[in-house]
Length: 247
Image (cartoon, rainbow, N blue to C red; front, side, top):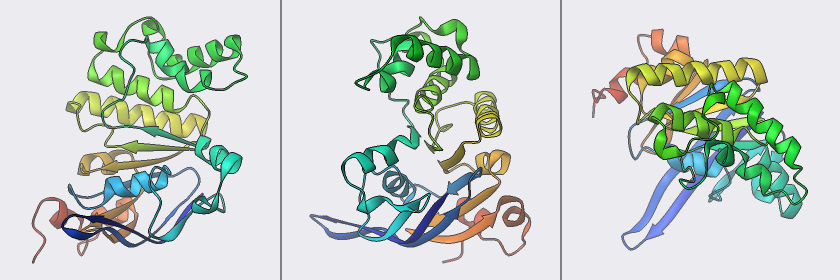
């Protein structure tokens, strides 16, 4: 589904060269719930921006279903972009629009959008995320968990093959976190959507991700089956994320 090959991303600022990603290679299979975990500043968000085509890699390439995203132009690039839905950390909802209008927004951008078809898709998605009774509400009237469910529904509106989630539970309490993770697992199971979760929370990857990678200081330091990594006595994950990695 997604192959990341020797990906690097370099920024140049007033202080010089910043290596945000260095020689990152990952393989994400169709149907995975794949977690990328690391501390703040490790390179997680840069990786997500490259995956979502918001950033262009400095080196290496990202293949989505065999297509090198960096080489795509025009209609081909737009078509590839539609295959990926993004759930942002801060929800990014339109505060002056209702829940239904927020979910419908990406669909109504299409020139030939059919109102009846859009309305039916919105109703379907709101039922999927458990918010069918909140269609007419505004974001200010929702809890954090409900806002995240709206964001997930909106990201699924165009029927993407991949759902990219940027710290989807970082602003949520433990109970709400569990309900959102259960929703993502349900979406993966029912729709067959491949999900990539960027997170700094051990519990997130342990609860819902079947495969994972650990990123530290812009490098992938460990990747593979989640259960195997957590069970392996030589695994670096706990030491890294609990701040116990030896210097």
